[in-house]
Length: 209
Image (cartoon, rainbow, N blue to C red; front, top):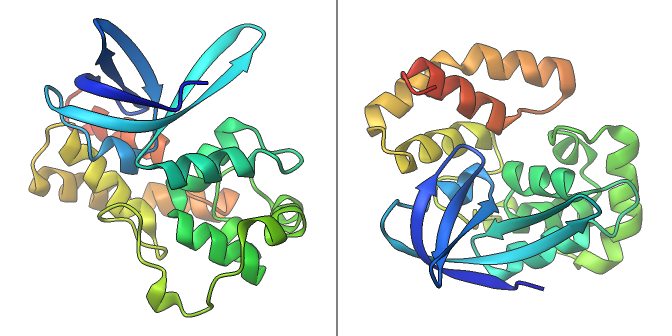
């Protein structure tokens, strides 16, 4: 298993990054919050988890080891694959995930695209004792990454990701405001906001294909 990668960031995209390690560029799938912390040309370290399938090898990257461990633990729940586990961490920081599971907060879990009521109930049932109990005091539920908060985290995630991709804070803020109706429509239709989809739309709006 590849537990981490360290090297120069060669490229950043809406879905991940390429990190050069020993002359080899490794493609790493990341959440928008993690992408926002990466800058092309700078050194970076990502905790990683390698997902092996019959027809693919996919490397997922995380801001720290705690995120990676939670990503892997989420996948032990029935019906949760790597994409859903990554979506959970794209919407909520690790502490908020633990709080939601331990407190049985189905509404918070259902904000994640791909998780409905039954899926949220299954996560609580199967993982509550394994994730550990956290306090219900949400004032302690600080974000694991800058700019990510439990309440409407998509705005900060999207803005940080755009800045990380080279846009100014003002340009990012304008794009976020333009996409509020789209996010509201997603929330009403699916119960969650797909940040990756919004990021691709924002890039098209800002003139990057």
